[in-house]
Length: 216
Image 1 (cartoon, rainbow, N blue to C red):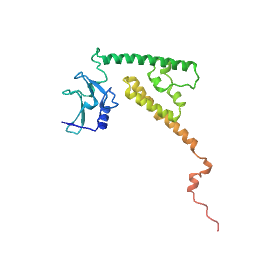
Image 2 (cartoon, rainbow, N blue to C red):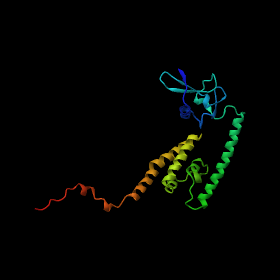
Image 3 (cartoon, rainbow, N blue to C red):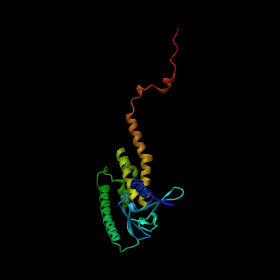
Image 4 (cartoon, rainbow, N blue to C red):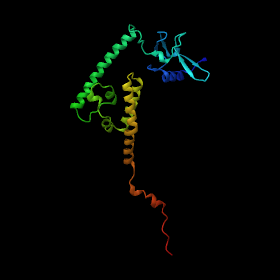
């Protein structure tokens, strides 16, 4: 085993690929380690290589061998830590905003114009059954191809950052259904409108058939 030094971009990609529950927008981001109970940043994380050439990550605190499975955005094991209190306060505020958003969309479903549609993230994170159980097919049928692709981007970003397993799985199902059924349908519809008239294109059999012999 030997420690290796990686370029910043490769180290960041390695952190993003192997960290569980930790976001790494850059190497300045700080996480907490369960082993040493201390905070560290991406720059201090050590990378070592085994005899097979595989790369492994190690906590940035000196003399700590904590791995990505031991890392967390907040020290959840210490309820008195100020970082935990700030996170709980932020979650309560976010929940209040989410409930208000759900109420607005519920009123939209019941009393607004039928073409008013919520975004798919609202449906996934909703607690109101009237919003959560809304048909994906109905929403996708009213969106253009570019809007569907944009929704997929938002869903992918959402599922990578969500800590809720139900929301992550449902977002993945939505992305699959859109790519498997709805985007191909939109592409087929666009191709049909772009095809030129068939009267200008001879039938394939007619193109291959030899011309009749000239009478003597």
